[in-house]
Image (cartoon, rainbow, N blue to C red; front, side):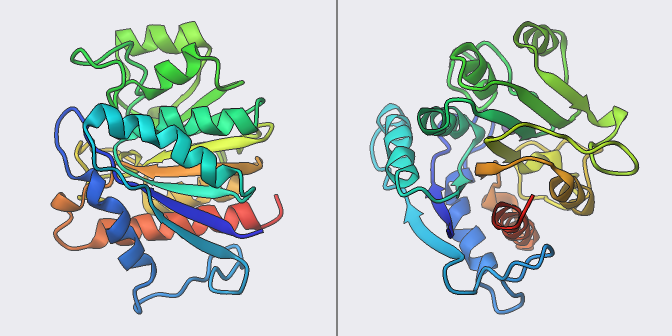
Length: 270
Ligand code: MN
Ligand code: MN
């Protein structure tokens, strides 16, 4: 069963900067760059026949509201093919409709979320679908059996209250990273949706993000934590890459690397 990728070029609900809608094409360029191969550290070669399908990008050309409404049906159409999928954002608002689509197919879905930010605001600047809110929408809609957050370093009183209200398991980065440096790996009953906001990484590694939040994970720590997961990942997203700020192209390469390792994890035995 191949892993599919689907671009979701939507950044209208980003609160600070636009640009993330351009991410999918830059991630593809980095992924297929002749400077690197499609081999993954877990021993899966994505270039081998039957391992990888590029499903293109969702065609979004309407108003923000119209485009946002296209995301769930677009994801549902691809999920019906039965392959694991990595969605390429886009800002983090897309995760609510994507999880909604996955929940239809996997009613006992759990969510693992890497991010500097909890994204649990009830609403943000008047928008309930802001990229600062998707996990509040997911939990209030009961789309996840459980939510585990890793790498958090922007907790505040509003979001702490939300995390407590929804029973979110929060691993703040100051307390360590599951599966890294002797901390036990996460063991989450599948099926799992993995949401990876790349601003969980230190901006030294990923300057091409809208919200620089120093003190983040190294790329190595993120990959080690991913590899250590004991969970069956059925779908994932990589969000918040903003190519407008990625002058060196390094952030695109980090996204491509994460994409390979997530796909490798999906395709290898748990
Ligand atoms: Mn986020
Ligand atoms: Mn974030």
